[in-house]
Image 1 (spheres, rainbow, N blue to C red):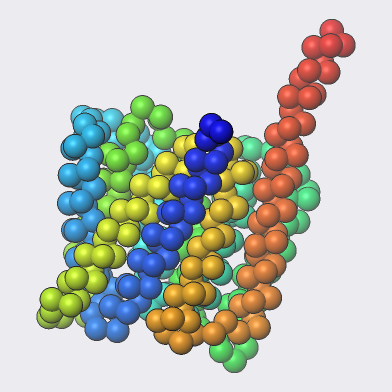
Image 2: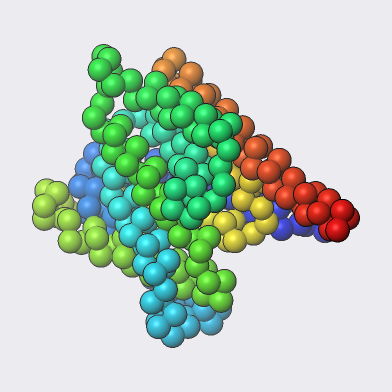
Length: 302
C-alpha cells in the first residue's frame, strides 16, 4: 500500500514529538547542574554542527539570500523565543504539566491563522479555542496552592511556537528544510551564548554531562527536521493531532526520570485541551471537505 502524504506527515510529527520530549527530559536533568543558557549554547553548537553536515551532504546549503524571506526570519524569532521561555519554565515545573500546556499549540495556531492570515474560523472553533485555553488555566491553576509563575513561561512558549508554525507554512517550498533547520539551530545557540552571563555564568562541564548534551542535540535534530517535514506534508488537520503523542512521552519520562505523577489538575486540564484541539481539527476537516462540494454545486447550477 502506498504511503500517502498524510500518513508520512503523521509519522514525521510523531517522531518529532518523541525527539523533542526526550530531549526536554535530558535538558531538565541538566538544568539542576548548569544554567538554561549554558545548556542552550552547548546543545545548540552540537546540533548546529550535525545539521550543517547533513545539509551539506544533501546539498541543501543554498545561497543565504534565500533566507531573506520574512517568514524565515519570523520562524527563527518564534523558535528562539519559544526555546528560551520553555526551558526556563521546564526547569521549574513538572515535564508532564509543561507538555500539557503545550498541547494548546494547535488551538493557538488556529487562532493566529484567523487573526493574522484572515483564515475563516466559525463560532464552533472559536468556542473550542476558548474552552481549550480554559483547560490551560486549570493546569496552571492561577491563585491556587501549587501555582507556579513559571507555568506562564510555558504559556508564552505556546504563543511563540504558534508564530513559528504559522510562519513555517508560509515559507517558500523551494527553501530546503535542512537549510531552515541549520539557521534556526544556530540562532538558538547564539541566543544561549548571549544569555550565559545574565543567567548565572559558566559552570564546569564533565564528560558525563557532555555526553548527555550530545544525545540531547541529536534528539533536537530529529525534532527540528521532522516537524518541518511534517508541516510541509499532507493536510495539517490530519497531521496536527499526532502532536499530542508528545504528552504521552512527557508523562512516561516524568515518571521514570523524576518520579512525577500527574495530578488531577493536569489530567483534567490536559484532557480539556486535547479534546478542544481535536474538535477544532475535526471542524477544519469538515470545512475543507465542504469547500469542494459547494464549488461543484455552483458549477452544476451554472
